[in-house]
Image (cartoon, rainbow over all chains, first blue to last red; front, top):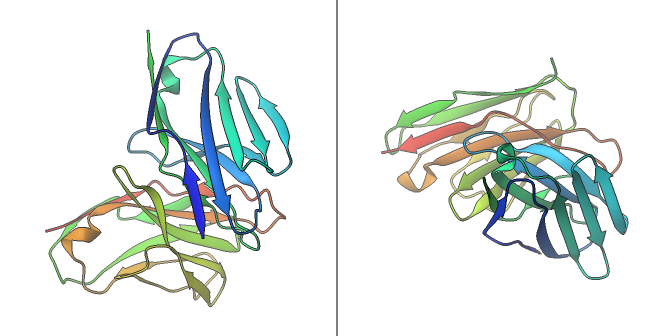
Amino acid sequence: GQNIDQPTEMTATEGAIVQINCTYQTSGFNGLFWYQQHAGEAPTFLSYNVLDGLEEKGRFSSFLSRSKGYSYLLLKELQMKDSASYLCACMRGGSYIPTFGRGTSLIVHP
Amino acid sequence: EAQVTQNPRYLITVTGKKLTVTCSQNMNHEYMSWYRQDPGLGLRQIYYSMNVEVTDKGDVPEGYKVSRKEKRNFPLILESPSPNQTSLYFCASSPFEGQNTEAFFGQGTRLTVV
């Protein structure tokens, strides 16, 4: 089976930094994704981690610790348009289809 | 343009009336899947397919059927829809290119069963 946990909601101020955590338990592990989803729209890919460490991509970075079953998404220089749901997703061993957590709704205010 | 296309985008139907939601991708991807999204429950996988004629149940398959007769198409069939299948549905596809298989999503189908 697979269990993915992330906070339901977070708020932050424009220009600030926010970290969204995700913990997972899975039988086997084939990588972890972060997706962004604006209300009523399709999820869009942000990042993929399969090895331990930090992957940086512009204002967004994603970190993975396989031994701890833990990942985080770091958003810097927050903008109002970053208000969205952030979905953590795992691929279990032997699978190439992601299973998603419930998502974290991020509200950025001025 | 590379894309995943779902139809219809919106559908209101009555209990028990069979319906099909189509999904087509033009990227020659091997993997396709269907998810439903409900408030507080996130994206839950219904069915997935790893290639033509190969389909498997996800986490919430009850009340749904799928088929994969061609690589590009993966329709979702509700033989006898019920109100608890009212939801936002997403189709996704991803290539078999090792592990970094980013999923591409369709625009979603909002289904209401009355």
